[in-house]
Image 1 (cartoon, one colour):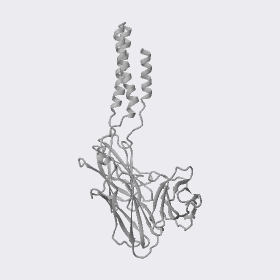
Image 2 (cartoon, rainbow, N blue to C red):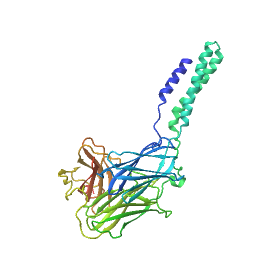
Image 3 (tube, helix red, strand yellow):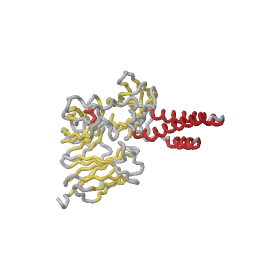
Length: 437
């Protein structure tokens, strides 16, 4: 019996490796892309392991910004405690260390130049597992009883020894059962987590309504203006302030001119509940299309679209990383004196069938928005918009698969990040109809 108990205890200890976490948010880093002060950056809020304790915040720059200083202010929404600091945006950020006093909802205020963003987040810390207490408590009790059984057995008190051995077996059994069944039980929410959704919100929130406008109402080519996105809950009429980070941003906004020669993929600042803003400069007059990708908590993704008009006269392009584009399917584009040509398979895509798009890239491509590459596609008339991600292609290339919904001409842009900037490679695709149509 004693040998059996020792073997069981050894097996339990071997099996007691931590199970995969059910909740990946507690202790994980939060990454939020922002377009601020003319720079594309990603704010990193490192996961916390205890409170009160340190909170580390860094800013990764994806464009040369010469150490852009970013003012930081962390504010607790529960007790009002506020701490401040400064971080510098750089390719390899140096983290500012602030201190938080409690878990729960907080706001991070970013300040750079004359722009300010307010990012809501939660400080989460894993709770102590009741299962761990039962596992290690059961093993501890079993060990004590086992030692007691050995001692009493040595003293020829066999009845008492058997009783202690039975107790040790019970302790090991409890620990083993917890190890086996705990992964199947729902995990306790971490300290600081949001309240459990009610029946109505658990079924998904309604889509947001959008109102996009420019400030001023009639921007001029070559002059900076603000694109303002107001999100409203259609069921309540209140501002939508429950956006969740998806692909490392609260919102992705893609702005293109009607002819496709102007392209910006930006991440607007939350300036008030339900309000997102980003500063832009258009280099030519005309009609512009704006598509915003958002995702609400306990709901799915949503694509919002609007348009606006820019007046004035055409200005020289102020976008240094724009790639010149010709009008042929898969035609080459030039970037810094180098010809880059997306390869399509099949060479002439067929509507409704998968098409593979590949592009050679330099060595050292960086992850941006959680991916190594992005493919954005717009129909010529602007009625369709698609966004897919790189397929983890080996070597110095990015690869995408996409099915064009209808025949016609499409405008497309491939984006990836290097050590010094975000590269945008535009091209056009002419899609034919299927033979069966």
